[in-house]
Length: 384
Picture: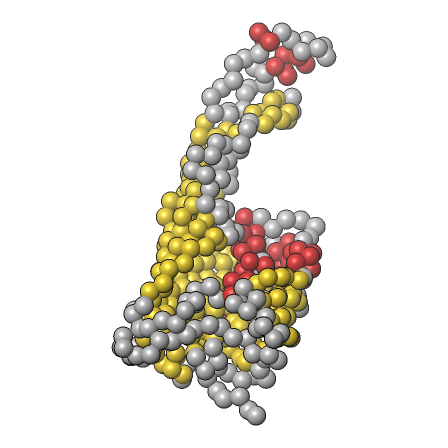
């Protein structure tokens, strides 16, 4: 997907649903038979997925936390899962291959990176990021699934780490995106489909889930509590599907009263600096809302769309940098002695100055099953 596709996705995110075509009606009633929605990976099938996400953020400038930067990232992935083995008890083995990657980053409306693995022409001023993205193409990993579709084993984590490593680090927002969307946990979430109910449900039934989620985007870990509802039946891409709506909240998974890290001392140009490290960020507010369409004929969700918004607060404490001559180190050097002066010569430490900043992340994501088997789209019968 090139820049045009990214622009369309971003436009849909900005404009919301008000301009979307009128969706088909949701049908069915409470007395209809219960629906079982357990995912089933058929032996020998190849499932191709398209993942698209638009992430917009307001983050404090590194050297001036009172000034906010508007950042936006669009990321796309083409992923294929092939069922290589099914045992008598229903356990399965999947081979995952990363077929294509796209990413575009911008800050204050200025494009920094525009990368498309299907197009060798791209612009960038961040070589470390494009190096990683290029190396990710063709990545293969193996996933072993239990009969209840839980990942019990992952092969290829070392290969993933190797491809994500490089001569220099990917910093800032781009580094967070890379760690979130190209991680074992992210691929695991696609495979396990944890939003589906364990038991058969009727129209109007609700079920709740609570699970930990990674914090690659907002710099903290969290718990996600969601409520899911089977709304009814709805035509989606030409097939009658079970429509699931869900919404939830993020809660910080960090100890609320955890103290900041101990102060550390460094010598720089003969001046001692005492710096208090930042506390782990805490989520002030986090919400999620989305919908999914499950096709019983293939026992798979064919598309899931969700929006989420997270605001995280970070507090840092820094001791002011003392002026030359007012520090123990300077006193020692001025005396030309290698022995430390008496403790009474040391000035009292200045109080640390706390700074609290908030960063807001908004994300619009779609997971879409685009092919099954030999290019067979969802909703079509398998050729015998």
